[in-house]
Length: 265
Image (cartoon, rainbow, N blue to C red):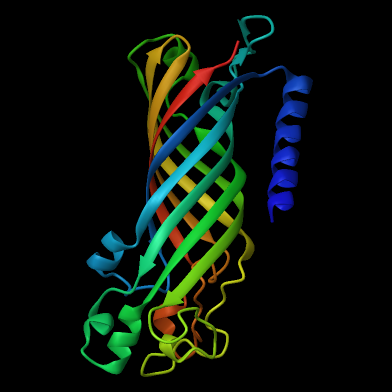
């Protein structure tokens, strides 16, 4: 998996560098960190304790292609709507979330409730991808004004490498499809419903946020992001959707990021 991450990162960097060499855009680099709320087959849908309990953290590095400015000549690019309102973001990020069962069924004083409470997990995900960000206000005007705000929305695609770890304090502790400690009253976690092997998948990423112009060469930003995976095994669980329609939605998460951006000469 490490080799796949490295190859994917080199491909993304290569695309960015090729575009820069061909078209002469300027660059920005930065980092961010923030809490993550993970929505999965752990817990109960639309349950406040699940939403508040299954949280973790995310960190990341970002690179932006700034179409409005050319660093090599210290000059603006031709003024077009696209150049003055869009940036292309490349990202490498990592999230880690602790997962537990919450809600009505886990609280029941029954064998099934006990088995659900005995289960816990962890989802680790490494993201590599791009998204296009739209700034409704002028990027040139924002860049030239200290203390300015620059709201944005973004949409893109990431390739994700995930590694779940589902456990139970009942039985052997390591959950497989044969582990009795992983079975609730309806045998929900039998027959391939648990998979700790890990893998990779695509995801859609959308975000809304704003930059704050700290000084000539740097910005702060805050961002609220929604990410939807094209897999239901990111958390390690995928019960039979025909029997358990409450688990029919793939895994997804919400991030709240705080970051710093530096403009390269």
